[in-house]
Length: 146
Image (cartoon, rainbow, N blue to C red; front, side):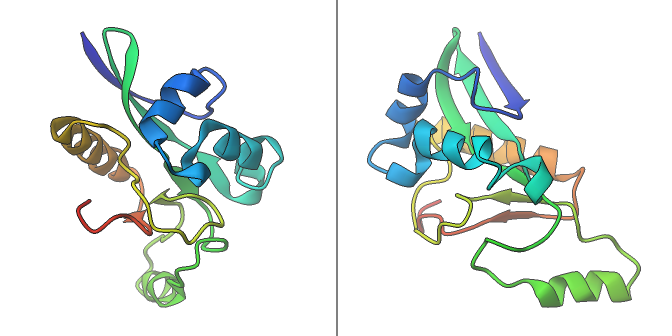
């Protein structure tokens, strides 16, 4: 049985399962992301509401994507102020926006954490569905093939 779910914390996610998906990316590791959230650096009160997308198959973590609902554009190393201003001029809300990234970390890497191509496509599709509740979906510093 397969399920895709959105959670607001990594507390209920087994670190070994997550880290197996993150591979050699130190800034995608469970410990790193949890430290950013637990210290308040990347937490709701600082404008980074965690929204982790989890794909489970037979109970095991088969894929994941770190997402954040952002209420500002700070800490992304991509400056989209012109987009925010354009939205405001046209009376359209830009924030919150949905962001797939590692907070405060302009390092290229995988953002769709799944070994199987079909699972990465499933995660991307789910992220696009979730993004309908936001102004937009931004995925930063991802690998070219993603």
